[in-house]
Amino acid sequence: MGIFCALAVGAGRLDRTPSKLEVFGLDLCDGEPCFRGVKAGTDWVIVKKAFPQGVEKETYDLGAPSDMLDLQQIEFFPSDNHKIAESIQVTTKAANPIPVSAGDVLMQYGPPCYVELGDIPGSMTIIYPKMTVQLNMIASDDHHLQLNSAISGLEIHNYLRQCHEKTSANSGPWHGFISMEEYRQRNLNEVGIVQSNVGIP
Image (cartoon, rainbow, N blue to C red):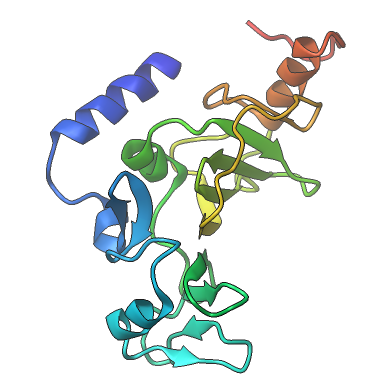
């Protein structure tokens, strides 16, 4: 599966047909994740000019009115001094789910550098230096990460996330499209704790 993923990502980069993420608005700007040309760290005045239909709330985050379905899931959050966009968040909604999958993210941005397993069965977060993506694998019986695994949330942030944090049972490096239990077992093996309830090739 790892070889397939690498080949798929390579082929995707050669094909310049807009990807699902690009159609939705997620892309790369100067090598960093961005939404419709705006990345975290952009001047807050520029963000508001780029999205004039946005509504700035009392909490100062900028969101779209309920009738703007193509932007309804997007919110921009400013820094404490309201000078720049500190983060851009995409959230799924029952009536308007995020129209991209785990495979789409991997095709666009390549393999993540770190993975965290959630407390809720089927919940996993894949981590890039300036972006985190929450995945939902409830549809899979063994909570196996698949190309079509749903995305429940995505955040582009202004700080640089460390990709070589200490491995533990529920956090560690990217191992590809395997189950949550296999991730946990491989993480434990890496820190020298061996469990034999799951066979790992």
